[in-house]
Length: 133
Image (cartoon, rainbow, N blue to C red):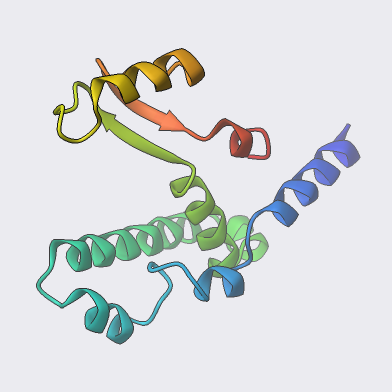
C-alpha cells in the first residue's frame, strides 16, 4: 500500500506544472520589476500579488521551521508549485451577483448544466483537477 501511495503521489506531481514552468507564466513567480511595470506599483492587483507571494513563502518558512523532515523532503520550489496548483483550481463566488456581471439566463444555464448556485456565497473548485490533487 505504501508503494501504491508513492506511485500515486508521483503521478500527481507529474500533473502539476513545475516551478520552472510556472515561472514562465504565473504572476506570483514573475519578477517584481516585471509585475510592477505591467500592473503599476500602486494598483490593488500588484498589492494583492505581493501579499500572496509573501503568504506562500511564509507558509513554507513555517513548515520548515516546524519540521526538519519536511525541510529535507520538500524544496521551496516544489512547495510553491503545489500551492499554486491548489490556488489555481478554486475561486470564490460572491453569492447573488449583480445582473450586469452575469445575466440571469447565464446563471440559470450554469445552474442547470454544472450545478453552480449563484444565490449563495461559496467556493467553486475545478473538479477535474481535484481528481489529481
